[in-house]
Amino acid sequence: METTEYDLIVLGAGAVGENAADRAVRGGLSAVLVEHELVGGECSYWACMPSKALLRPAQALRAAQAVAGAAQAVTGTLDVQAVLERRNSFTSNWKDDGQVEWVEGAGISLVRGHARFSGPKEVTVTDSDGTTTLLRARHAVVVATGSDPVVPDIDGLREANPWTSREATSAKSAPGRLAIIGGGVVAAEMATAYAGFGTEVTLISRGKLLSQQEPFAGEMVADALRDLGATVLVDTNTTRVRRTGDEVVVETSDGQTVTADEVLVATGRKPRTEDLGLETIGLTPGDWLPTDDTMRVEGFDWLYAIGDVTKRALLTHQGKYQARAAGDVIAARATGSTVSDQPWGVHVATADHEAVPQVTFTDPEVASVGLTDEAARAAGYDVRTVDYEIGNVAGASVRADGYTGKARMVVDEQRKVVLGATFVGPEVSDLLQAATFAVVGQIPLDRLWHAVPAYPTVNEIWLRLLETYGRPTP
Image 1 (tube, rainbow, N blue to C red):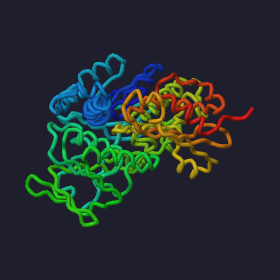
Image 2: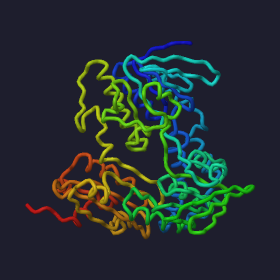
Image 3: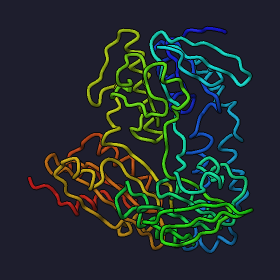
Image 4: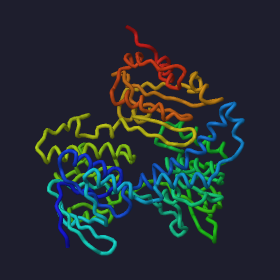
């Protein structure tokens, strides 16, 4: 067995793991990535990128159809096969040569195979041919293995060979009928994508759609899905699933029966930690890995976790943010440099708590950052919330005929700063970074009045929200 030593070992070569290794190498350390699938991970091949590639063409077509003049020029329908081929280009046809080239160019080593802890700061990697390599870390090991879809314990579901997000984003063709079990982001986005392909979509959610967002967001997306021809069942439990030949039959708690060609399960995620040998270092296989804000696993001085496995914020951009903090602090601790571990310091992931931005790429889009009204009140803030119809902004009327949308700003009345913002409407993701600056920077409302939005753009929504709130008195 070959034995190799590095300053840092990173388990998982997805976007999150790559960032951690890169930051550590930039800080003067040696680092190795261990990966048993494709370098680049879930986001590159089965999640963020292919899903958005599936969503964008139909969204662009609908956007053109919403503007007089452009609408008359649209004479054809969506070419689904061309959409799928474009999606393939986004995933590099599920080949990771380009990602491997980047890793090598960044001065990071790569070991292929499945990693399991064999002791403190020690990992044994088994390649597909049975070859084993022992890796030892001088300073730290980072777990960045991501998460897997949860398949709930519904009668007959596992035997029905359901799709998960991977199958949905890598499908070679669009089924004629698709049943979706779930009401979160994956369920809503894939319902939007496949409805845009002409698939007969039925979405079954045991609660409200997008229940972690402001209530109006899920309601508006559900209405839009229905306008696309989808059936949306909320507050509905799935009780049984069975596959009969080429069909899948889904039964609900209220006696409805849905027949489809495929069934997609989108009911949550679980940490990919079951087969990492965590028991050898005193942890429980299959558990989430809680960390402090420098991403160090509780109870360890050498073990770190980043990304989905921490359950802090299951979003690629937040995982990469955590990775930058972890890689930098590992390098700082290893070299004896100053560690900035106070809130909003260089080596902490403070934004994970109350400043997380997220876009759900449905049509309309849902863009949000920070706390919802309900979450802010639950956290004990003295809150005032203001809403505004985005379609009443001049820039929105230019962008699309009959533009409708809604914006909400959640304000901390004691400090007069924005705690959260939510926008629902066509292409509102363009508004999100300004909101993120306001939340992270804790910019006082009286200063935001001086951030003049260009006219006529949809960014004028900020002025309208501030006007609705009321200008501060001198």
